[in-house]
Image (tube, rainbow, N blue to C red; front, side, top):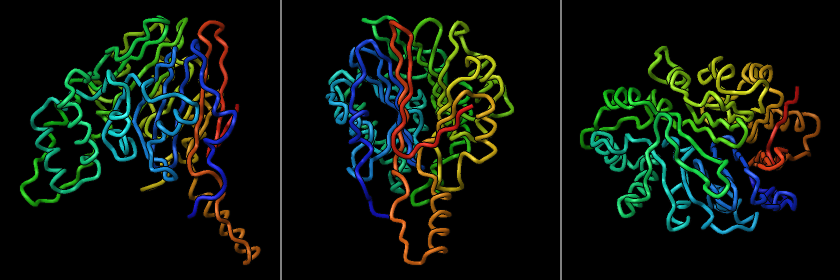
Length: 363
């Protein structure tokens, strides 16, 4: 489908950069792709995951910084939650364009030789996921001081000037890494294997951004549940060390799927009726499902779903063509959507803006 109309990044309201004393959570989605941009105060940004803007072929995070008039040197940290294609496309471009002292946060599984041997097998098979990940690893090999490892209750970032903005990783757990390594099957030469394993999402990095006065932002990545207290969301919840912090904004895990839902998240990690943000997924099946939206809406004061809803767009095109065969629906909405949450650290006032392909559900 051809691009029509102006990009939502050209919106004059969007182009206003955050103030030095504002924290910002900006979530981008397009139906296959997720990227988060965090402003931690004083023009310091942390990028979580990446996808490419099909208009520009640039990582959407870099296009966003261009739109708000800030240089790439403001990127202080890049976090890769896991290596699925919808989370990693273009991430190496961001790292190579960031400030010279950029930190790259990864799962500690990259230290394991078996994992690296498996990664090499993916390169031989020309796997898209592993090709991009290898670019990241190549950068790290020549810039060894840049790497930081995520894990249970590890602070990955702190804004020393403000003193009120820190980011903590809540996963992966050691048990998840050991379990994953035990399931890895190294390919023999020329052997075709899958480079997406059933438990990939259990290594996804869950993040919590502390803002001020006991408030936070919880970023669920693609973390899922398993019937085991040592892995998945049960482990994240059981090992949560920040009982004084309850997040009022929640990036819902795994595109709102039931597999990422755990009642204890809402009871123990979140404040009552948080604002929930979901990136949709339209590639193999569609997420979130209607029942997912209703479930999350019942627990939230507002729900924002980001990314073009291909199924509903196609249904609308069919209806339009049935009623008038001369009608051509070239584009129903922007391909990419964006939700931006900003909070003033001094006054505590906050607001939400949405641009592009975003659906909003209010209680």
